[in-house]
Length: 115
Length: 111
Image 1 (cartoon, helix red, strand yellow):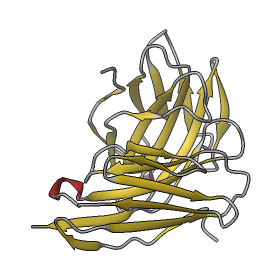
Image 2 (cartoon, chains in turn yellow, brown):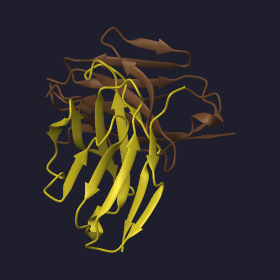
Image 3 (cartoon, each protein chain N blue to C red):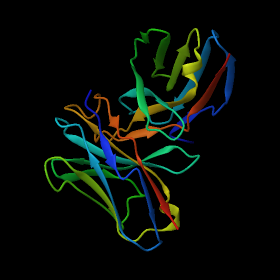
């Protein structure tokens, strides 16, 4: 069964450093998402991406965040200058032709720890 | 008011029990509704979509009441492997596929 993959599984970084989280969505999917989950809290939407542009972003997704689909397979989330409060699990998700009704499949996540 | 609200539990039930979870959502323009399951420190996985007519998948039954903005999940004949956090999830009204998650309800099934 096709699945979303994410690398690395765990990233430790110093405050102020840049990190890039990588995702490979399911190959024929068209819609891509990033969510995050701070330990003990709910899953929160960060950004949705379609046709090589952002279709919606949350208040959390400020200027320090960016997303890119640099080639036909990867989807990346960059955090330019990490803060302690960016420590969380980051999930990538993708869905197929209908972004409203199609299932979003989640990757296993990247645990980001900012020291 | 929270966008999606659930009782966090935990619900501790014996094997074989029937358990029900409820969820309310605040945005009447929400279009799609789901129950996801999340095991400890893992990704959310779709359990089932929820339709206005109600739907069943084996031991799981989901109901949606749009007038009351209320979603439910019923699990019959609980198994030890059902122990997890159940996430009530609603799609946003913005048409971008954004999902809004509830806090989750924790279920612990005991032998």
